[in-house]
Length: 158
Image (cartoon, rainbow, N blue to C red; front, side, top):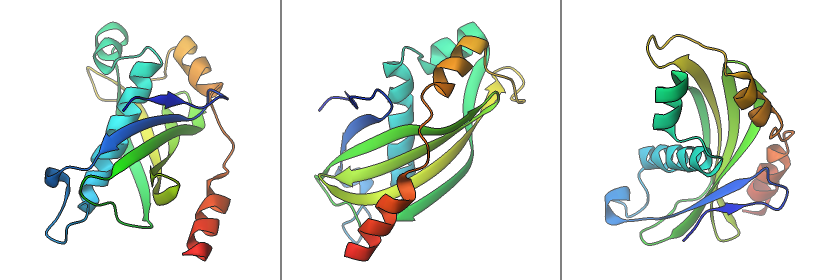
């Protein structure tokens, strides 16, 4: 299992396996665990891009905090499934980033998410503009919204 970057350099995919600790009494992934999968993928995306969270906090007094999240649960993941959690930037502003994320099992779309993340000062937890270089890097990675047709197609076929 290793991370994959799409050929266009815009979509990142992080593999994760479903373990017993991720499931509920019904034998499927507990809904809150999907949030952890999404968080890990965003963290690994940052690391892949050369920006460890601790380094950002220490060197730039910068942290990211989830401000809003919208999840659409389409199908359940189950014990031992190998999942791919994707990360794309939908919109980037100086003090916020909107990510489009998905979780798939092979070609099957299980979940879509839109996650708004605030850029904050690590010391004060107040909004802080991203440094120019980081902002420009993220801005160049924006992908226009193409998620809805995928979701509608998946819904209509299931």
